[in-house]
Image (cartoon, rainbow, N blue to C red; front, side, top):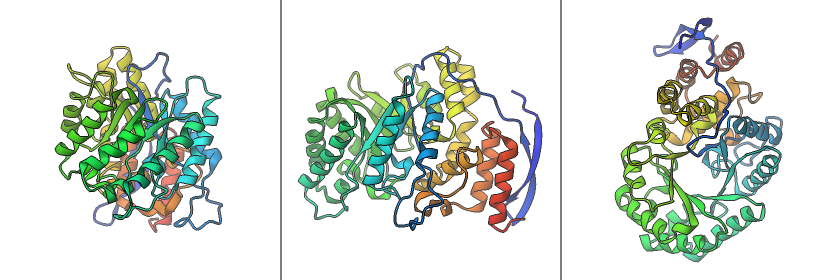
Length: 391
């Protein structure tokens, strides 16, 4: 679709210079009028409390009102919220106590939103990873967090464990932990296999450095516990590995893509199946994701790709290596779009990306039609550049 140029802004480029960039009118997306044919969760970020006196590198300070308002924004587009996941800086600024409070508040807010869906991260992050930890302590930590989520009425996303990765001696240790935990959950869970590109502490998860061998272990766990597994979220940024695993899942167990590079084609699927979605990028591109999923539900695959394809370069940029810093780009775009009044993050993570990275993010968001209020976005981008000494 044609979008007219309405503003211009000078943005930094390579060579320590500025170039004029033409900003176009935003794309207009319609809220869904029919159920999606794919389950779609957005892993949601948290809004920091910029007025807090807490030291941001040491203790999380959350603006609860703005954080919950953003979840209402995601629900309004028909997306589920995956709460207290890595996008919310879980284990990277947000500890278990803060995460449980976040889960409680989100579940409470969801009760007043018809059709609101929430998945809640449960892990072991109140344990300090140590090779000397016993497997029983890891199991007990999982049990504690799962029980806390279930007590609040939440549905569990079973997060990968740094503590387990640190102390497991073999693939059998992983099977032992997951078998014990899954035997006790009340409702089927989503297992989350987060790759080392997202969290280096999880390298070698499932007891193997090879993703192929790790996949075999994971699939054995899923098959053995299939009645307790709704699905598995795979975040390896490798579409071929995800498709191969998807085709080996037991009947009734879903694949939730966590591939923020190749999500468009994985969600669309092929003749042998498709992936549902649990994605950090859906936090940033909610209107486009919703519009595309609505088009897919109506059988309009051209419309699906027309809306989603321009978001893929944006997502690949936000999630570029070091991938674990992707939260910075997600929050930056939320600020540009007026969902929060500042660009301050839990743990001081707003400093994790370079000036040129933010400038390119602005361009790609505009190309995807996702600067909802271009005048506000330009104003805030100029503020940001001025703070970096670019005037």
